Image 1 (cartoon, rainbow, N blue to C red):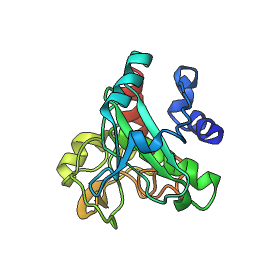
Image 2: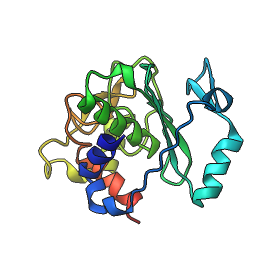
Image 3: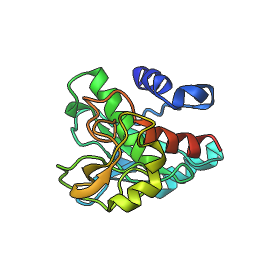
Image 4: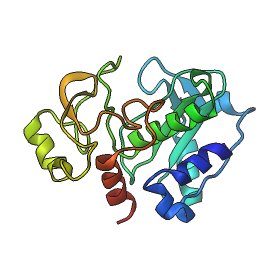
Length: 198
């Protein structure tokens, strides 16, 4: 868990307020069968509502619950927002090393904060949406047109959310291919700054 925290605190824009990010570790080895239940739906793991509520009552704010499945290989998170509780599930066996695991965590954290998948080959197509997957070029121009030409990696690239006709802002970002990208990209970083630093 330590290396996930370290990688998050180095990632832009999180490094700008790393002192305000808190992590709490809960070891549930004995109780996990009472709290978690596998599901055939999405997400593939359910969590008892009273358990989630007890954490919220203790913390006094909404949070992101990160579940590390040491033996599993499925990683996912619901597209959510900063002000809503959401689950991030990380199947540790699905990653080749610590670096890949940390980037996978950042990808799923991006979803839990509102970022969309920027990949075309995706087994679970999802709806397009702000800030990083537009249904057409006109919509993309409204959302990130001001960055095209100012930032060399920002453009109108076909394919995101599993649809080859949707438009994404960059060729490579943590929301597209975490193993090949080093950052979220200018459009996603701008969005994250806006929602995380009001």
